[in-house]
Length: 268
Image (tube, rainbow, N blue to C red; front, top):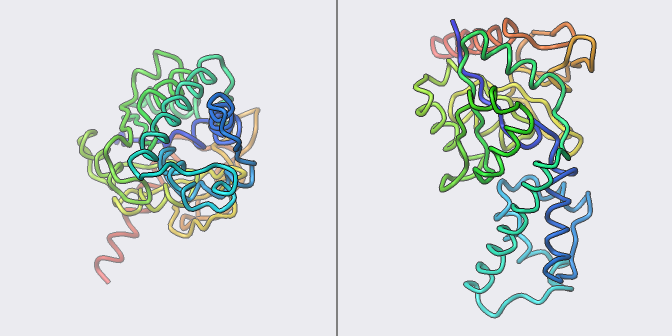
């Protein structure tokens, strides 16, 4: 039975946080003449906040930021400021993506190709701006495969860890949650999928590897590629240990095991 495979974007399709998002934020501030830049460590600490606008807004209460950047007189002026920042940051980010500054994570394109050929539905559910998500998708998958994806952006939805974006994904795909599998890279994404009742496979990045993933079906270093980088098991509720890379049968097994666990729990 074909299922639905739902990827997060940043950190799952590509490890964009350090190589693109952080670069775009800091370049944007240089253009605006703002004497501020996030270090890798500072930016990693903001990743528990979903959404670029929300991360910018968090600077209001950051003592280090406030010590070098005067805040506007009113909250409305602050909101106008960070909206302008975010618009320009998004433009810079998309330019980085379109010029091929991103490297797809191991196994992502292969597994998406196999899923499409197997009749699975494909989707990306991301808190990112829709234009950013689509730019990454085309860069990673190419236009033909990218066109097979349903894009569910975070516009107007509560950000992860709220389950809203995954609830919307299930509705748009016409599926039950137990017919889907989410692929995430951090705890907020995992909690969002779990909150919507969707089993989740986690492939953390360097900036999220120390998160707690107790609710995940499986935690792997990456999805793996035959003859390329191999997937290493880090943990998870499933007993599945892939032979170096995930295949469609492995994904289906995770979904089936999750459904059986749900039924067992329900009948206890």
